[in-house]
Length: 190
Figure (cartoon, rainbow, N blue to C red):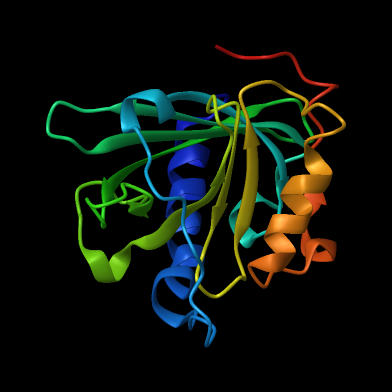
């Protein structure tokens, strides 16, 4: 990070932009289906963003967007989102997530104000598609206004994305709202 005060400002802006995510986005009439079970230990680690529905908090990103999840001792998940800016700088936002549905572990709540772990200030993070070896994941929101396609590698195999798109659209998403993320022009971070 080039500027810690800028980072604090961006995190604050992320919270403000997440407010409609947490409070105002109404689910559609048909409930989104999540995967039957998520092994949180296997889900942890670094993920590359392959495509997403652009939001206020990530429109400043030009590429190299990643999410890294770490299981905390108390069962919560530390979240570290990062991306490159047009000036070449790296920006990061730290958050915390917790399981909202222990039956599946596929419904989580996430907040970027970790010291305020309040459900009404947190956004829904639903895992709606998951590769058999946890090689890719698709995260959605009941409103279908938010969505992310994640991969363990900077690129998905060509034969994988069409199936993901088909399953997204079966869940009520319009894939034309998704924007591909530039990973090829940015060095992997681990």
